[in-house]
Length: 530
Picture (cartoon, rainbow, N blue to C red):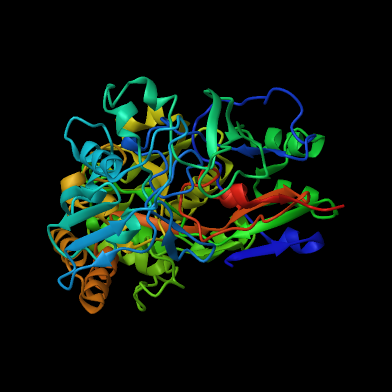
């Protein structure tokens, strides 16, 4: 297991989970923690859609749907709608899945290979508004060869392809007849998963009820509700009052439950990072010397100690330092003197007020963070403070994503990301110049031909040594020309009522609270025997 379970005073040593997004605060209707067979959890964000064709549940644990494969507690792949792990051809370009028989969608219609073919073909259709479709670029074709057999043929031997098949499968007989981008299926889905959608009040809650004919057995938790509560304090208050059975919390609020004998605190290790985008199009942040100086001026260790209370680690790129994919030697020491020398040598000289100027351009730029997000705010303020010591003015601004997104081409953003499945999952979308300005992909519009080549080499090779060398190149290039200043990797913290057997955590990605959290396996929870 990857979780750390903490009781009592030890919980005070844990830290932060970032409550991202800009959803409205809500009050879940009715008492939450009364029935032994129901669970209500407090989360900070909600999905934009419930359709896997548009990206919902693409990394697993969607509750309504299943993928061909899923992850166990240790993040190892195991069969779900497939009866076994795939058969892979010698050249690594053909994946054959034999499907579990007797599985039905919640409307009673049988699940077959045609549904798998439909799901992947629809996502890859240029008319489908799925921002993650580039994750499936390796697919050349997907073919239902029999009702219980589907074959994927790849353009190249994409090593982590099996990880892509945790993606949920949609029913062709329902979704094929609708507008994929705006049809009823996007808010009223039908799947094969352990739960059925009972209702979705946007900005308030997503309610599920157990699927009595689930192929894996009907869950013991009959009603499962995700209450969307953006505000940390409100979430903690509702947990304390009994309206919630569990919640995602930052450390200062989690400490309030440290002595509570009826609750357990879970800290999940993650690949979740916080970084600052350095837009290429801005006269200041696009300057390589400024980027290098900021990368050296930030005191990452102080951020971990003071902002995260030690529950996290310094980040030097998207790969955590304890991952086998991390490149030793790419750590950056906090070196303010060197940062100043780099700026001096590049012609950025201090003005009368201490802020540097070059060719009439003042070393000043805005840094946006999402309104109400305490951890992002704290990181932004700490980054601005460190930058000022080097003679760079960072003006912090708060706003919703609707305000921030149109400004991302020129304004810096306190952003986040991270995926534990494979380096390709995060780095390709983050750094590939072809995706610059594509929604929230490559937000900084980073453009580095050496990185582009390395990302492609890693993506198209099945040789682990080639892939490792390519990602080493990416990480070394980020030292030379950062494009982003990575600050911290953050542990996620949850407080859960002690009324079930089964809660635990996996290694988590940036997105948390929906597919992640101690309720990732709620369908296997059992009420504790008194």
